[in-house]
Amino acid sequence: MVTARKPKRRRKEAKTDYRKRMILLKADKPRIVIRRTNKYFIIQLVESSEAQDKVVKTLSSKVLLDHGWSKDSIGSLKSVPAGYLTGKIFAKELGDTECIIDLGMVKTIFGNRAFAVVKGLVDGGAKISANEKVFPSEERIRGEHLKDDIKTMISKVEASLK
Image (cartoon, rainbow, N blue to C red):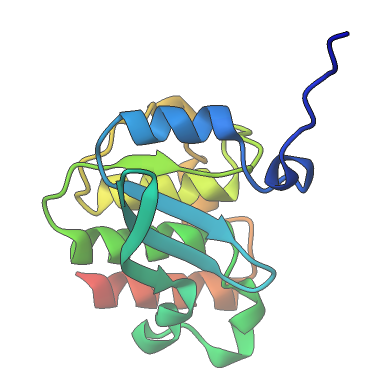
């Protein structure tokens, strides 16, 4: 009698897709892990050796507060423009490393917030292969759909990055 395999605990909890993880590990390149919490984006550079992950560098969108993001708008640190700017800052700190993207269990819908972070990484100079079709529109990245005070705040943060 053949019994069905029981799914692993982390798969049942929707935390790990083991097939994707194996593909990422076989690439033998450092990964940029992008996660969105209830308040922030967290970007990490992770290196793997024999399926042991080591976080080399990490950055949260909370760093935007140091670049001119208003403390009154702290709830918008997980928006599309905040993700783009956080990715751009991380790419400048990253330097010349060639990486692959690990979005985890995020649904990869074209133009979503996770792809705004990837767009920021690419525009910041990171060596990542990505299709331009998946990125959000320039209007969403610049915050044209948001209030005027948030748009001015976004332009102030972009000016501080130059």
